[in-house]
Length: 500
Length: 118
Image 1 (cartoon, helix red, strand yellow):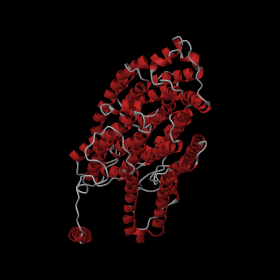
Image 2 (cartoon, rainbow over the protein chains, first blue to last red):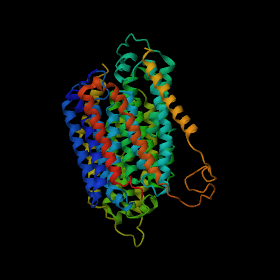
Image 3 (cartoon, rainbow over the protein chains, first blue to last red):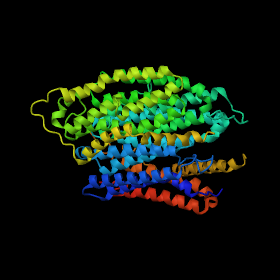
């Protein structure tokens, strides 16, 4: 049983290893560096992310062909589909870290400890996006969750943060139990935890002939699908497994909320796609109904409940629930366009959603109640950049052209229509109209209300200014330049290739 | 196939035997001079019944937590040791990396003062 690892194997894990190495470096930084800790730790983490991005881009260039160099028994893959989500994950991690330093200083966090946990979570997420085995998916979901539990409760002197950490821990570990139980049943039915072997047993997506293995069939696969759907849906805050989302998002330190609101979903969705659209592709008649219902309920509940929020973080939490619903529409279409739409969505979502949290974060770092939407009154007079940027993010989240948010939503609904489920697209569009009610309320407050007398000017700081400008530019560039969408198309080619 | 599990059974018997022997010997041979204080439920200087209105330091929890962590890491060595012969140099390098990662955690805990009592 000698183990032979080839260069391709090491290549596939290299980006993840870089991020883990950076996280360990940060721990040592925290232990030994006493002056300028925040600056040094931020520098190290951004450099790490850049290096991992380069490694991931290299992997993208090398793996032009079909998915895996390692063969069918592989645990993880370095295919383009995984790399594309790595880009989204590294991007959202970098954006969150760019705006974090002022908050870290005002809250007296240990910068090295805080940022290393974010990197550990990122590594877990990258592993999840690359996994080809149910066990690796479970392992990586635990790795990312463990870091996120600690991060949610990181502001340990604030009861809200403690509550967030504890609530997230209890509910999430309960959901993990559902996930692993579902995986066990799928393993029992198919005899393997490897996604490719499961495809071979159950029959492929593109109508490949199921092999002669006897599938210990119906009830096990069905119950396994249902339980795994619960486990994934919890992490993606899909209704009715969304209850934790507003509380945790509101209680957690704002940089953590910004990070986890995008990155967790960008990590779980690729694994969700690999398991459902790829491994269980032949069983789509069974899981489609489940996802169809979840998508509809999620879009409606998320958008309607967001209307009555007075806290920005809770509003964005419900908005995040609604967006998970839109992505679920694309995923349940179960076609090439749908997978492309999911991939494309997260590049866009990273820019607009983390950007939307930047406003809360900048105000909170100044000691203001930045979470209260009422305090945004006349913000344009206090900080034009912050107000304009937040306005763009709100329009993009609502899905206005020519921002990228429109195109992300368009592809998601187009996939549903292509798959013959026009009703999903119609409900998506109607709920998007409802969402204008809360996104535009923020815009109206910022631009059309007079500023209170004596309100100070707001300066965000160079890194945050850079992050805001880059996100706004990113939203227009990603939307208008077709290169990014083509990138997503290429990523999905590797994903669907290996079923045939 | 079942024969392989005999070793596990032997391990169980040995572990149980050792436990009972040691506890039994202590019970038989150990001197016992009970006082009221020694028989109190918590023989650690704390009064038994007291309104829990104030905060009290629990210094040992960090030590206990670190012990748990490193103890669990140590258990990971056992399955590795069983197959080391077949894993050759690869296995050695893997455990080397594992120990290095562990070492970072150790240095971190040390530097942060988790091992100081005060």
